[in-house]
Length: 558
Image (cartoon, rainbow, N blue to C red; front, side, top):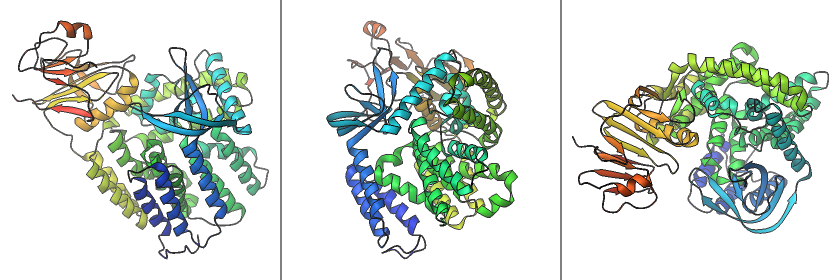
């Protein structure tokens, strides 16, 4: 990228990325961090004619902090609507999908997510083309779902970025098979769309096809629901298109880091987004594959891409979520043709909904049947893999060395976390959940588990908790009470319990209180630990209420 002002090292972009990452984790105001990062960016690019680009960055910083683009809505059970902006959940008066609201906003922690609240609205407007495309997307989603008698769901997720219509059971099948990344719109989906455009327009000059593909990807952003991976992919395609059209060359792995820096400048807190981290790590890993290898070994490209992407994302998945299928690379290769066909159907659905529906209903039945087959056959490879923060740092160091030396045998060392021994700690463990109840009990080799609540808490709170605490899928006793038959947790004696934990009644060392009616009649005894799942405090007992800790650990003295 030429000479860069104050920095003469050959690793200019890498240094810029590291410094930007360090600034992003400083616990100060987001706007202040953006100012620091923008100054850092200028120092590393001094000497360039980048006034236009800096103006664009400043514009996006202001838009990110003082505006909200309403991109989606969801009907609640009480008849009200929940609205969503590019940044997340949004609360305000008289909101409409497609509105751009300019004003002051405040954030409110709502447990599993951050809600943005319109504190003072200055004015609102609509973006002509994008607002129309968002409205078109909403109409297409509703038509496809309801006109198919609620049978089309995969197409809505894979092409339109609308995953709320997929059943919990199908969601779990994707998790067990290690194919969640195919369900969420990502750069891979954008790549498939570009491939389709290149195939259909094969008679047109290659540069013109590239330009048409770039415009199509930019217009696809609102169709896909403004997902971060799609925005990132659109930026990649736009930069690559311009460099190719003007006969410039870029180093892909440096471009990945540079684009990540621009994202952090606009929104420093994006580094805490799992979607951003996973998509960035996957693309960074793939970018290390040499161009020569791609040209000479086309038949094993998909395997190598999967290995590199997995090696870079596995440590983060193990630290953040704790569950993983080591056969996901193979499953991805087998299932990708189905995803490609669904994306092609989605492109056709933009122009004709009624034509697509009968074919898509049948195709999704085949797709789900094949998904059930893959999840069943590779269930043995699905495991609870959780690592501590210091292990994550070791993995990061390995990936850094692998990045600079571009040696696959170094990068593959991250897979060693799959062989770490499971934790063996006696005690009663309770995750912090507001809408569900659950616990883990480990005593002298006996393992018991219990969960009752909604699927969201089960997927995003309880399962990572189980992985971090026990590192296992199989338990001796317990019950998983969900609206569907979950296959992630296996219980040897289902619906049977030990005599160590009771609900709302005495007779066990630990009593969990989650029923107000029974709680009012309960007699509190000495030497019993009463664990409170109720909002009101328990008076006259040994009570544990919700606090700042993610879970509570009680060691049992025998």
